[in-house]
Image 1 (cartoon, one colour):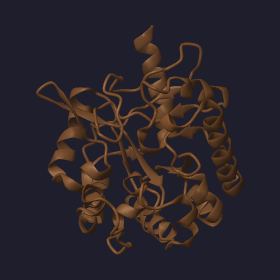
Image 2: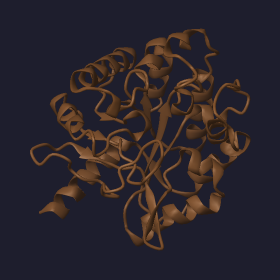
Image 3: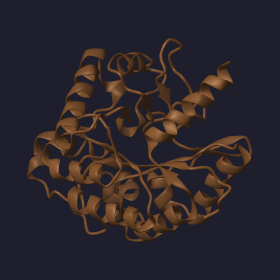
Image 4: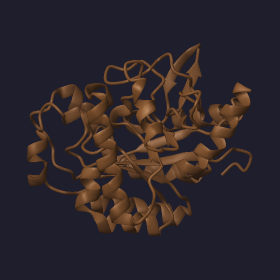
Length: 290
């Protein structure tokens, strides 16, 4: 690892293979309990990798998963990682109203806290679904006492994205210390490129991610924010034949190489929990606004 680089935010969006946006139109939520549960074993492998690399991370967890796997929640917390909310059942924020969003936050937070005995102060919207349509979401997060959100992808994308959002941490509400930490983008020829993980990390050569994170760390002098899912290290997961071809390509491409690529990334850079990063980024955002 390059000692001059800042500590970046490492995060895991804890959801199972059947709970992803790519399959939301072909797998009904009422059928979830009857599908093969693979999230616990995949998270166990991730915890082993993090222990080997001696890094701490944040696990943005669905309340639906936490309710069914309280022992996993305790194991994550006892290993020194942060538990944060990913909502209840992967409903996108822009498809909810204020009341249902508030309820979703309350339910997911309570079940995670009850399972692990820790406070939850961070939130990531499913599919980065806080955008220009949902500025009210920040008011509810602040009212419920969340310290930070990492719910914005400041790019244009067919499933999500808020192209006009700042690339780096910002305070969405002038009266609150709530800080939003967007997922990482890099710049090339004046364009923003998604570079914070997920399918982009699996599909593109590793050299792209290394270049992008170094750009953010060295040129911009800012930490990067990286995310991935437990199902991405699981090439043996069930296949959803009814899904559209585009969805299957996005979901299944390079699953067999993800674990090795992830290992390289973790050992190439400095990583830490999102709550620690949020505290530093709040100070930076306040200094820039002064």
